[in-house]
Length: 410
Image (cartoon, rainbow, N blue to C red):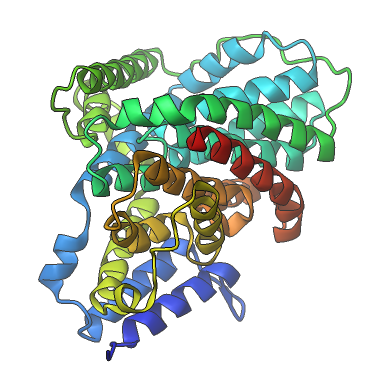
């Protein structure tokens, strides 16, 4: 069977550039690389403009937009700092503070998407780390691991879970995810805390920042609180509808309904829109176009045998490994529609979700949220090297795979 190799070449170049992110002295951002790949397949006629437009998943794009609006509002208002202060003030030592930060960031990630928490959580975590003596590198690793692992538990925790819930046509996605993945996710968050504190032990004693109320904009904070309540309420409705066998509504409505109070009632709506991560939205739109052109070549359908992906550990391991080369969201967009056609059980489908997500625990390139954290940290004068991430992420990923495999195999 003859394949059009040009989209495959473009795909390879895109991921090489994402890995190095530099040509000579020119530093290239990830969204620029992906956008260049999408433009290339369009210009070379590998996908028509109409097909490119149809390939962009509108539900995912609107969901991301809504969540980014809410994320920008809770950050700009200072409400996130206030909520975090409430949780973190209960910690008595830096060690307990690190655990509290990881649990809080993991929980928010499950509800607001890991990419959102990568953007708004990085300056917050660094602020606490610098005031308590926690190693900034350890704090950044803790954030990366917490938002990655925490996002496993729900279909809105990360973009790949959202895509998977759509591809697999899970009628009660929240119920399926929470029933099978909530408990192992909680266990893996504690394991991540133990691993981070082993490599970067927090100081035994250090004065913790006093609890305060750093809200900067009371009106916007009230709207942010309303937005979060709407999101939580609609998530609850989705779960109840799934349990009672009723048809659920599109997940993007959760994010758009949550964003509505800010966009409609806030006089700061334009400032909030300016804070939305439009670059990440451009990345996803371009990714859908490039992956559709690659899918249309028929290469992966005709050359890869998916019938061997049957056991939970194998599914998870393959998902983790392959995601290192093409990142987890492109992995889902490119491979999972093919794999799901094999008639997999709900446990196997959730293994794909968990495996492609915790791929972000292994290396920086395993998840877009890692890259966002590193880019945000570099603006504050801190960073992590590939090796610093990998030496901690490797044992953690192995432990994560073991825990999820056990629970999904029961």
